[in-house]
Amino acid sequence: MTIWILMLVLVLVAAACGYGLGVVGSGIMLLGVTLAWALAMPLGPTFAPLVPKLGMTNQVWLWLMPAVLAYAVILLVMLILAIVAQVFVLKHFRNRDDITRLRLSRLNFRTGAVLGIVNGLIVTVMCMAAVYPIGYFTYQFANEEKDPFWLKFATRLRSDMAGSGMDRLAARFDYMPKKFYQVTDVLAFLYQNNPQVVNRLSMYPPFLSWSERQDIMDAANEKEFLEFMQSKPGLVDLSSNGRVQGFMVNSELWQLVDTLDLTDLQTFLQTGKSPKYDPFKIVGRWVLDAEEVVIVAKKLKPDITGRELMAVRRALGAMAAGTTFKATTDNQCVLTLKGNVIDFNKLAQLAPPPSRPQGAVPAKPQGLGAGGMSGMSAVMRQRYGMAPQPPPQAAAPSPDQATPPPVKVETTTFQGNWEGEENSYTLKVKDPKGESENVQAQVDADQLSFKAFGQQFVFLRQY
Image 1 (cartoon, rainbow, N blue to C red):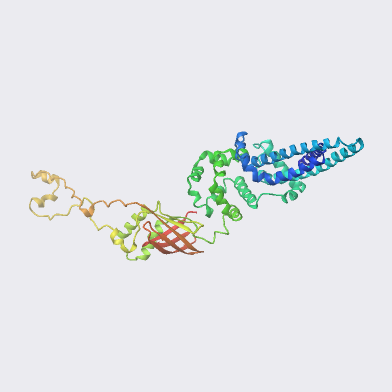
Image 2 (cartoon, rainbow, N blue to C red):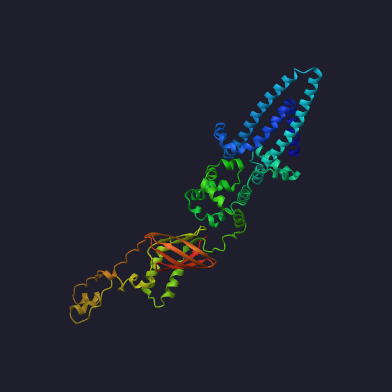
């Protein structure tokens, strides 16, 4: 109903203006309406600096108002020209006789009214074409309790357009690209299903590198922001939030969005599966599985000694906390190694030599002399008047008995790239010195294994 009332009001107002402007003025306005529609978006950036001066600092207004101002200015200029043209026409009629002047006057005003109706219909269609994408966005974020009147009105118009069939007419003049509606659908799905699917967003393969950005990590760890998002705020409050505004003006983020397959992203958010990236099982973030590496070490060296096994466990204990592998959708990979590479062919060098327990004293031969009495009890020594036996002194630990030095922990990053699909991949990894190595990697379910720089790695998928 709202759309029909708006349409009637616009047509009546345009008809009245057309009657007052006459045929020439209405013709100029018809040209002006067309020019304003064609030039509003291209000239919008010219008027962008004026929007903050009008007190509109919200990102929605900063995006929407420049085009509106451009449309209004063009229409105002054409209206002034139409009024001037009507003045000249009326002056021309004064030189005619009364009957001719009356006939020309009627023709002028009545034809102007007809052109005014045409202008009104065109403006109505333009208004519907403008409301069509805006209302599509606001309708999915509608909040009756928190939305202001103008936002509710835009949402109501869009709903009425769908109910009356006017949306099919407006769609023919839609100026928004298809990606706008895809982005809207993704954002609306996140908004309506927060927090159930928001965490899944960071697991989408193209976002692997973005999840480690400082601004993303800060937002994910900010309790107030998370609570704000989970409260399902109104669209105005949402667009006024500082962090949301930061994401809205982040050009790098929008460049990434421009490269995304949004249909695949929406499928991933809904199902947790990505038809586009699931065949590349290596893509993701992996963490070291230290226990599995120990098992592999036993398989590679069946005669491994207990001391060597202890050395492996000790080295892997230092590595497990920070050794990761990441493969991204642009065929890049990063191996972050915390600790030193363990060469399974040289495990004997890692294991410390055997040693007796610290503080142990070698046994002395028992004889009949004073030394032979060393095992006599204190009571017997007192009975025979012998001096008390001094307590045994712990032997100083030998170099072999000294506490083993702590594992030296260093973090090394190996850059490279990958190729392949399904379960088998080839990694080309470079160490910090620039030496590269081609590595064959295998993915089995959620386990990734390969041997690089003399060490066997086994990783578990983190996401």
